[in-house]
Image (cartoon, rainbow, N blue to C red; front, side, top):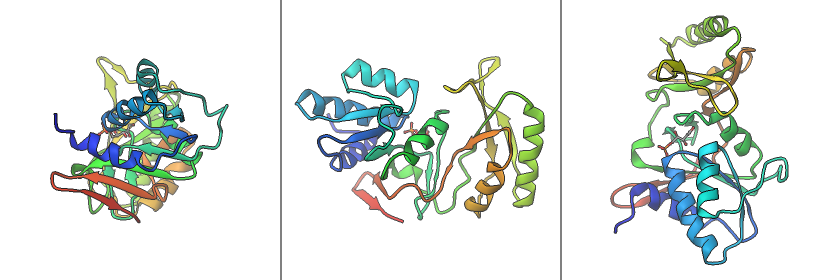
Length: 229
Ligand code: 5RP
């Protein structure tokens, strides 16, 4: 059976994984393909140790036999491979569609290099069409919402914020927090917006990954493109 685009991007990035590496493993459906391919390599005797970014990735790695450790045991990683919701030409990213952005960013920051795997649908000229996930502390939610709104106003963004729900209740992240999905359309200055969000006490982390990825493997129907900032 032909490989999906997501699996093709994952396979291309896996060529950068060398035996003995400590590998950050992101999350999402593209990373699930990565985990499946990695599990086959491990089955064939390839030795790596992974640090997963979400409870879902952790469960899949365990199910398929990918050896894992924790960031406490391995605080410095050689490489992280992760998906993205949007990728711009500088390889700035929006992440967090799967609500795992905080752990994904901690793992990316702990890794010497970050590779992105995606299909062509994720590549954009300007970030923002995909709603920006922002992880917030449940305490003081309305105050945090207003402070975030002020940040968007200051950036000239019409930001509608929607609390992510799971059924009738707010979705709770792996870290016990909530997510606002911020519909901003066009984020002209991601760095500036990131700085504004980072000083809001109730904001734990936002899904803008700026200057973190060094290479993206983007699978299209005709070819796999390798993007660099
Ligand atoms: C999860 C993420 C994912 O990497 C992002 O949502 C992409 O997911 P997918 O590979 O399923 O399109 O940031 O928090």
